[in-house]
Image (tube, rainbow, N blue to C red):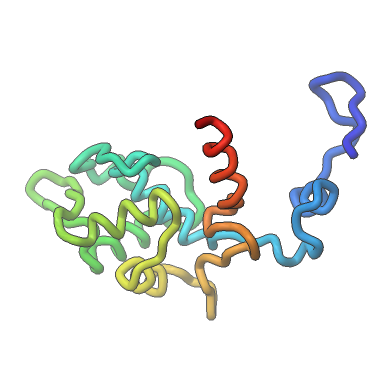
Amino acid sequence: MLILEKPARLLRQVSVEEFLLLTGGQSEASKVVGPCSTAMQLRGLFLKFVRPDGQARRDWLDQKAVVAGRRFVNPKDVVDGAVTVGFLTYDPKRKRYDRTRSQLYADMVGFAKSLQITPAVSSLLQEACTIQNCSHLIEIPGRGPDGRDPSAIESHYAART
């Protein structure tokens, strides 16, 4: 239970693990995990080309924009891995990165939307991640890979119709 001093201020802050325990989430704080930092960086990169709903955002970005933004790990390593696997191609004449138009684009959309790991995404994460024996994305029991409870989402939309 959170005790409020004023409506906008808490008397004490609680961690995510405490919050989940207090609200009936997970019974063990150690089970609360998510994507590794490399997976978060890769998702950020893919979201520069794909909107969160899966629609195309843009076809290319210049070499400065592709590494700009939030940094979980070195973004250049993730970009280089994306080029190696085939998600992006580098055009040295124009100094920009173009997104793929092959089947890998569906993999890019799946990872950007719901963190779906395909063999191509997995090989990119294996190459770019520096954590030994990292599983890159761990599902929370009873929840989807993005951390949301699928049954709660379905029931929310079912109540609207």
